[in-house]
Amino acid sequence: MEVRVAKVYNPYPAGETNVYIINDELVFDSGINLPQSVDMLKKALSDANLDFEGARLVISHPHADHFGSAYLFRNVMAHENACHKLYDAEKRYFELVYAHFGLEGMPEALAEKMRERAEKKYAGLVKPCTCCGRVGEKIEANGDVLDVIHVPGHSYGHIALYHRESGSLFSGDILLDGITPNPVIEPLNEFERMPVLEQYLNTLKKLYGLEVSRVYPGHRGVIENHRKVIEEYVRSFENRSFQVLEIADEKTAFEIATTLFDDIRQLFLIMSETIAQVDFLANRGFLERGDDGRYRVTAERRELEEEWRGIKEEIFRA
Image 1 (tube, rainbow, N blue to C red):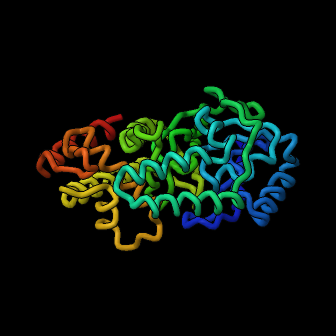
Image 2 (cartoon, rainbow, N blue to C red):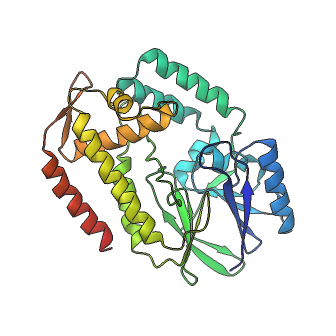
């Protein structure tokens, strides 16, 4: 299997987006919709004797730095959930997100200001993609067959591609070297949301059990030891849950987030991570959310330590 990588400009902290061209036929992710990013993408396609008409594009997940320029392609595939988000460039998603931020204690004026800012900012980074189709369970690239694996946690619509023969995993943002990806909030409606940290832990268990020789991630360099990265992620999530439990009593998620993090310039990510943790702790009986939106601690740290011991045993014996 031949893999080309194009490092496409991305203004976000994760750095350049990796666009992979597999066997000069299949493209994995497209990058953000900025002129210099699109120019880099065009050059990479040209080097593989491809263009937007002839290439088949697979989107790892519906975040701007991975699907922003997908609208340029004529043949686009993604998880069904991702296709819905590509269709309106995540407009409905952000409406629901900021409704949940308000429910979790963020001042209404701030939530509305953030929603308006996100909508305005996104207008220059993505365009709706109306030709996205649901990807199947397998996909072929010039004779090589790759398994399509659903890997929710960073985004519910996240998929990875796995080539069993070579042990190659195209991971998108579910595994990154030196960064623990955010378990980003996934609203179902104005009042319900998915248990994203639980989903992430289940995904890590699934990936830990795979025989992988190389991980081709959405940002940064190739990962040679995917199990070591997964172990680091689990420790990071575990440590954060202890921190949240320690300060959560009689606080809203917004108050927990702004207590936990000194630098709140990345408030979207801070709120996402905090909500993922309070949902995880509440679902497992360590927190209880009152009618006033404030959380009460209902168990002791030693009980949470025992809970995480069981979680780690389950993941690492996969």
